[in-house]
Length: 115
Length: 110
Image 1 (tube, one colour):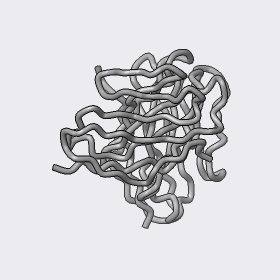
Image 2 (cartoon, chains in turn blue, red):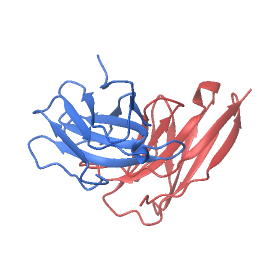
Image 3 (spheres, one colour):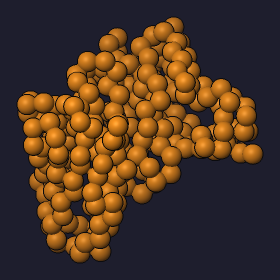
Image 4 (cartoon, each protein chain N blue to C red):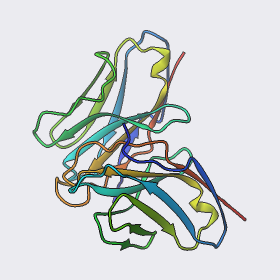
């Protein structure tokens, strides 16, 4: 079946502009995660959605970052007033349920470049 | 902060076994060990996980020491396509975030 998809695959924006990144999780997956990966670095957790529970926003680096999820489907990560340090690959992952292995399936990422 | 320690890089000859070590001395009783890998320019890919018993699947084997303070991921017959960054992660099976460290960059050479 289809995996996690993300759009756009690449985004170049000017400093100060707002951007929206989209994630379509695997159908039926109740958990959705956003991570950020700067060049040459490991993944940084940003936010986690699980069903109707309040999201875990503990990884969001500033109030310029926000994310929404519609039910158990699409999620949008929004970065307002982008800065050059926001340049990174933004990865989305989804997982089925709350039991089992916590095996997360990752999308290909959106590469954001802030000029 | 990541709860694991891994060597930054390793080399392996094609066709030989690749043994990737990981230290997780502060692991708690209900935490699992997860391994993911990330091939260049792709999203991470789940490999295997375990609690205390050794595990094997079609991709790899996971050996966890009896005290659970360290583990080894084994790729039995490494191929060039196994060249990637391998992440060892300690986490909760009920979900929540995974804390990725810097991982081990494995280079499989012909």
